Length: 469
Image (cartoon, rainbow, N blue to C red; front, side, top):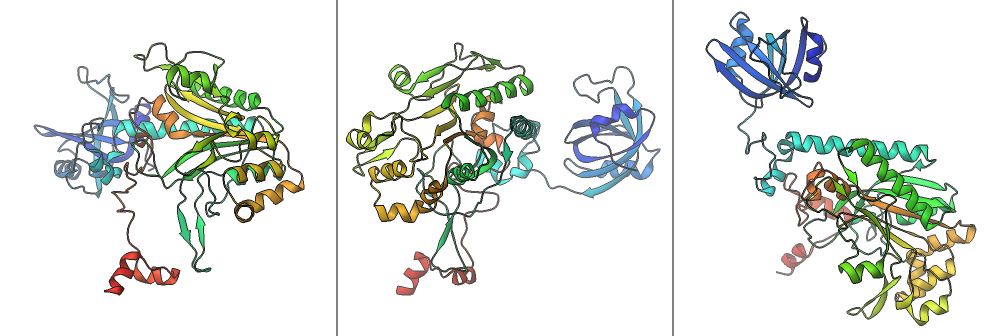
């Protein structure tokens, strides 16, 4: 007999069914033992009586979080015992046979609460138990539904989902790279992508025209409260488009997500307002202002685009100009001499999507003229030979016919955290790391076996120091 989910049991009154899951609670009432059984769909009550001797004896031994298979008859609950608070509250299962799949030790913390009262390090250490909470299961289900909606929406809009490499080349994109040593080519390294930036632009050179990817991104950043070393973003790139056309697509996507999946939420203004970077900085002292009219309303969503960012900013400590967004962003002038003369006055075709005080997406039109892109790299302090070493592949690709193009990258976790009312992005990730980038469950990062290090041709400073002694 095939197992069914708890949510399906009310449709099988008068039938013998099989369910399986975890013991949520056990209650002994005289000669009757009640088990509340839990699976991913919810709870159902199981009644165990001495008439089914083996099942009854097993139920009396069972403890919270044991995993059981139960075969029994679905029947209407007696009047006065029905529970309107759960979907299966009108029925119960009279156990005929119980199989113990596995037993469970006492859990290190309660899982029948929302979990906020428990120290986060303990929760992350036992994340597989923490995820049993209905709140976190709901968050993961919501994440799945949003991702599925994005895929369906963009597919209907003519976009093609394409995966780009995880092992790639280290290039300056604003943060530090995670690097991976190559065993086959000692002394050389791959890098994990901070974003698929160059690959998605190369896909436009290839003629794809409309690309998207649910991309994993990796950034080796200093500890920050609401950042993660790896995260997920919706990556979009389009050819032959204007800035406004890109923003229009992303606005329709987010509007449809909210209306379809989160109908209790209210979008404050539609179309989304457009604000100049200079204006929001002067008025709010932030480029991601919280524009809600009623900040006490958790269902109010104030989307807005911030546009006309400066192209460059002066890095005083490094004594050089740097790109505000990234060097591939297209300046609002293609006059290289004007850019070199007064970099601080140049605006960029850059746009951010903000929501309730968070930046949830950022994008730009891209520079597709090789000479202009090389000029931007030079302005940022790169030597010509370094530009060729780091970006020669992209510059060469642009010599073979490249369309004007642009795109946007949307951070999935920040968007979900706002929609779900969570205090940080870790609450909408299955296995996040701590704020200082540790995985307390897997004990990572960790040291490598000396044999692995030898194969890679790597000696750590710790080992070198011991050798000198």
